[in-house]
Image 1 (tube, rainbow, N blue to C red):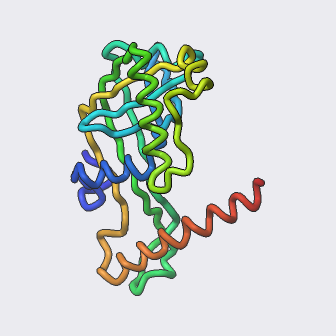
Image 2 (cartoon, rainbow, N blue to C red):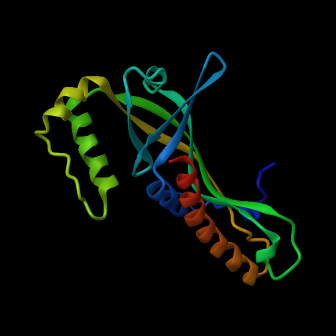
Length: 196
């Protein structure tokens, strides 16, 4: 059984790629001795593959090598939806956008490829303003290459979970969309004001 229900599934790969590109911090899940090992890493999408880097001292680094399976979760915006926003009688719910992927991972051993990949990832993450450029002759970059491993994940399974009140009337779908935008902007500020 697929869950959430079909109206909350989005199998359009282009939509899922947009989530990955907009929210590139992935939850990377490997399994060792029947126990999940989880790291949060930014990944860059390139033609059916994801490229990432991990510190060699991270316990998950060994599992991001030769043909191991990996599960990934990319999280888009989410929020509580109060029945008060709807024009019809509803119950409270939670709306969210998630992308679940499965893939096979392999290490990329080339230091030259690692260096270029770190530069490329920085360019991607700095877009569109590019206020910082990671230069190829940056001495700190060269000094740290021995402590970073590059890996490539070939995606084998895609699953988009876009629960956005699609089962409601068009007016209520739009109200839920507006609430998702409003709540995310407000919740970030409230959280940061409390914590920092």
